[in-house]
Image (cartoon, rainbow, N blue to C red; front, side, top):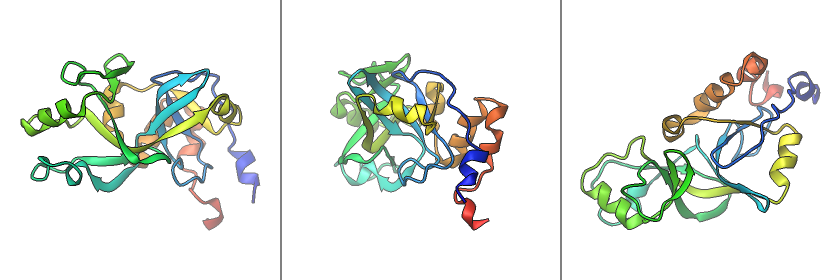
Length: 197
């Protein structure tokens, strides 16, 4: 029943991706990493793009991997993407606290001195809504992301830093689509697998 793809197919919105943009997956994308996902681009240039899936929480917590954090409240890890799946990355809003941070956009940063962040956490400071951890990342080679956008696999949008830091689950995907306007309403209630209806 490939007709479903044509009935609900909506052309991309002609926004160009950039560092700090979010990518919203179209509802038919069946890839395990990217189905109903929202990806934050932390790098985008002529050589390629890098980002993190914002809304897919794993069952893992940061506390299990670093000494000194074992007795603290669990810090969730999100599924950043299929590349470098054995490496932990983080985004944050704590530029003044974490040296060597890389600016993504105003108020939002990528990586930096993990030891400084660890000490900040151990000192009892809350990081809810300020730091988000990812296992692996999502990457596109030169021209690949542009091609996928032209194929309507992704919509490009923007989101405030506080929304990005608290993004979770399919609800964030739906809310990100709602911001784009009424033409995407059909996507919101479309089943993940139309063949089951």
